[in-house]
Length: 121
Length: 108
Image 1: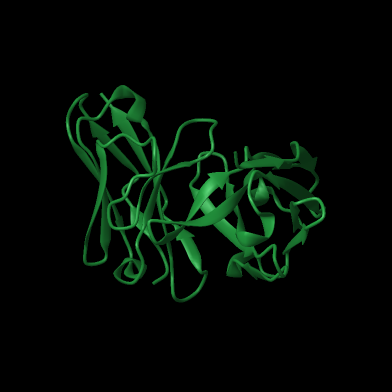
Image 2: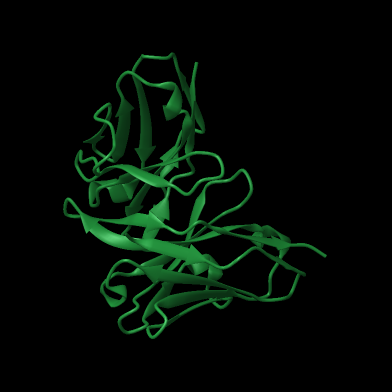
């Protein structure tokens, strides 16, 4: 079965960087894009970006351009999301999520368990 | 606009029907997907495309469209349907993917 297992919770100081990993299993890793989505406390879902594990190409949310970097390691079936220059408003649960086509619709069908990132001095 | 707009909160009496809407220009070009999220859990897709349910999703969940608005209808709401519901679609300008702000459904 498809599983996306993320790294554990992080606490960072403002200005620092954080890297969250997401290890995929149960499907052909290079066949499906992976997204990163975050959710601040009590807030909605915010799309952060997407990575194609096949070639490593990425597209980032305009709001995060210059601060976010998504990479992948095909040998370990793992994708990484690094966010730099952290500020308090980056405090959120970060999800990796697998894209698929179901009933002809491109959507996110599986989600990781989420990684809580807290930015606090 | 590349945004999707949802009502923040909706309530429904147990066993009654409720409709949650999602409005945005992108919905004229792309289908929406609807996600249910319960506290402390990752989202789960309940309806996608024109009106399709992934396996395991009860048939009381259905989707529909009119113009730039997508709707999620729960016919005969159950206590376990109390959750946050998010719409999501692709967009043709700005960020390629966008989520609505979410609707908190309360089952009374």
